[in-house]
Image (cartoon, rainbow, N blue to C red; front, side, top):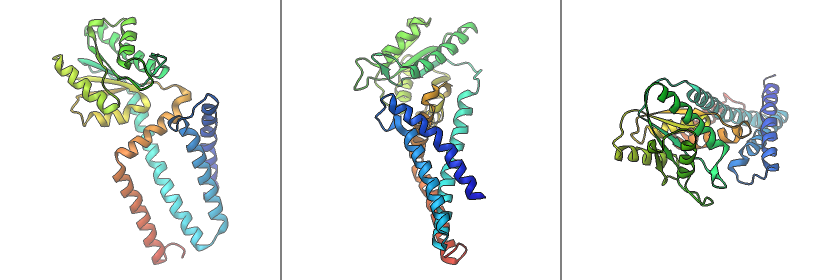
Length: 278
């Protein structure tokens, strides 16, 4: 019964991932980051097949191997569920505290203009800015994003134009156009605010899938910040969250490697002492 539940769960997870991945292929996606849903779907499907094969063999060694596979897969699934729950919760908590500045993180342009993903971040920033103005405050807004190899201008310039076009006074928009990753976004934005003599609490705006890693990174850049999440386009959700999960795993790589090593060590002890089939 347990193995049947595992197989059904693998199929239930793999099918939507494969469907999303195939849609990305049809839209012309070629990079690994955009095809993560397809890769993950195939991996989960392969896991289901491996579990079924090991269970069907039925020898003591295959049964012991099955226990190890399920233990490692279960650990990764648990970590992903914790990550997903924390990211969604953190990204959708309504923020009521006041801030002296808003920092919106860039995420790429399309033909020199803001992408749908970036527009979502900017619209969330505009929402918070106009709400602050209505409450009698005028926070500075930092548009943070450098120029990619395939871009003809910085993300900061395109973001600043969008913000001004939607009601933010140009004098309240600061452009940070040097950063190439999240850590640089936060560090260079902090330096820009310091140079402008602006202190106090900062609200950082990104997409909900990116909130958790941004918050962890902010703690290492001495930026007194709270992170807000903007909605992620439905078709981008699987790959975006999977990419962030991989990034968070890498950030704490040694810890997770240690946990997996402990699982393998316990399995080895159980195998050699006869607790598991031998």
